[in-house]
Every structure is written in structure tokens, then in C-alpha cells.
Length: 456
Image (cartoon, rainbow, N blue to C red; front, side, top):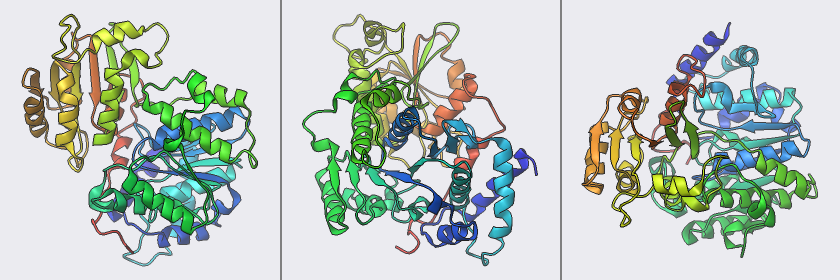
């Protein structure tokens, strides 16, 4: 087997959909020798900010000298992004070997109970991290938490970033129901750290933590951010990243007795954190600037809108002044009338609340191009355009057949925002040459399932 063949095998696992429940993952991990028992974890769940918080935790602990594993999803371009050690992507040869090792084990499952793509990849990651003798694994939940395949581990700390509306058809149509799925990662006696500020969701977290005698730290209720979060040169843009940083720092503080980290290493880790596709600024040779952000739900779109409206207060890459960007990003309809408006390229998945995403972002732009996401679940670009026109009648709105087409129509624009889906951002990184094209591994992110969670 070579790497393309291994990827094709993983593609084949998508036929089994996405099933909620831990039975398959526990069984497959047991057949593989229970590699999770050789590792220490920080388990991260929540609606938004999981990846950024994971990236911060990984960067800080790596700066402190630990050998770190990082497991996240979805990937932007390459499947190998999902499994990293010291921020080095798993090698192609290791992907091949791990697939070959698991194939005989998969034959021990009866028909109708075959492990899914995510269940297999979860155990692949556990095997790899154990082989690599990682000191600590930053372990991001996939969907929900309670019945997510990642929930077979007992972590040193359970982190819940926040609770907002997303995946309602699977997780529930109220914040309390969604929170009930997320708190499934809470384990008896294991500290819980959260930045949740929604009272309805927070109540569920508090009750669950109390019932499991799990110490609870609520960053959202802190009177101020930790000094390191305020003073560190955090390269991730957006005020919301300060909250994610505070959450990461509170987690590190909760684990200081087990894994001590100095303030110096914390600041070094925050200063060097890297997490593509989240308010990522790309400058093309022509000088054109593109801001890429995977704002894939309403809460993410609101965070993006807030970042754009307060750009002058956001940490910026060297050589880019806050005044310049604030002028470039002045919302359409500004009373100043002196600022250039930016262009929005928007693509959203159909199962997201795309109407409210359009209502949140469209009023900020002067030109809007809607495009389909390269996904079976893409929203219709024509429907997106209609929603954008309704939200911003003054904007120029056009429908494009692809992201490539949209980028081609904006070559003369100074500033472009590409957003609405991480899938779209991954495609943009490929098209812009900032991530190597590799034969369409983005399609591995596709999944479908029955709305009723198995075993719920």
C-alpha cells in the first residue's frame, strides 16, 4: 500500500457514515492494545475556539519542553494535519503503516457495526502518539462530546470552550441540550475549565461538574484576563482569541502541580502559536490582502464581525498598521465616507444557519461574491446571494460557480474576506499556494449521519 491507496481506504470508510457511541472505539482501541492508557490528555470540547485553544495549549507545553501530540479536525487541506507531534504533520509512510496495522482488526467487527472513518482515525492517532512517546496529547473532540469517539480517554483536564448553536440536528435545539452533549467529556474528579457565559449552558456544566466532584473553573466569570494573556504578543488575530488564551492559561494553571510551566515559557508559547484559517492574513505578490476565516456558524460570524469592527485594537502582523486596516475595513454605509470598502467571498454549508451568517456579514461589505463550498453539503450560492442582497441592498452581489471563479473576479480589489466555512478556507489556501495541493484530501472531511444519536 502507498499513501494514495491509504487515503482511498480512508475515503471508503465514509460509506459507514458517522455514528454516535463509544462501543466501536473502545473495542478497536482494545484490539490495538489500548494505546490511550500510555498517554496523558487534555480533552477539549465546545462550539467555537476548540482548535485555537488546542493550538495555544500545544504551543505552550511544547515551549516548556514536552513532546506534544495534537489531534484536531477537520483538516484544511491535508489529512495529515489531524495528527501532529511537536506540530510536525504525521508522515505519509506512518499513515500507510497505521492503516495497514488496523485493517486486520477491522475484520473482527460484524456486518453493520463496522467502525467509521472518525473512529478509525481516532485509534490511528492514539497508536501514533503512543509510539512517539508523547508526554501530553491535546485532544480535540469531534462532534459533541458525550458520544464522540474521542471520549474513550480519561484526561488530566476537561476543557469546554463555549456553548453556542451549531449541529442542532444532532446535538439538540437548545443550549441546554447542546451543553448536555459537551459535558459528556467531564470525568469524576477531573478539573473542568470553561469560558462558557450562556446561563442556560453554564447551569448544565455546573450541575454536571458538581455531580462528578470535578473542580470547575469558569474563565468567563473572571474579573480580568491573566497577565500573561494581556501582555503576550499573541499572533492570532481577534479579541476572542484573548478569551481562548485565558482559557488555555487557566488550564495550565489547574495542572501546574502535575506539569509545571513557567511564565516565561507560557509567554513564549503564546507568542509562537500558529493556527491557520482563523483570521489569517495573506498578502499576494500584487499587494492584495486576503483575510481567511472559517466562521462556519452564527457565533463565529459574530466574532468575525466584532474583529473587523475593532480592527485597530487587534494585534497585527509586522508592517501592517491598525489605521491602514481600519480604513480598508470600514463597514459599508460608514458616515465617514472616506474609507474603501472590502469585498466578501462567502460559501457556507447547507446544514448551517446560513441565513443568519449572511445577515451578520453582508452589511459589512461593498461587493459580495457567493460561491459553493467544495462539499456535498454546500449551500446553494444563489440562495446565499439572495440573503446577502436582503441584508445589504447597497452592495454589489454576484453568484460564482466556484471559489476560483470568485477569486478571479476580485483581482483588482485591495482587500478580500473569504469566509463561511473551513472547507472554503482550505480551498483558498490551496488556490493561493499557501498549502500544497494533494489530490483532494479535503473530501475526507465529508460525513453524514442519522439525526438521532446512537445510544442516546
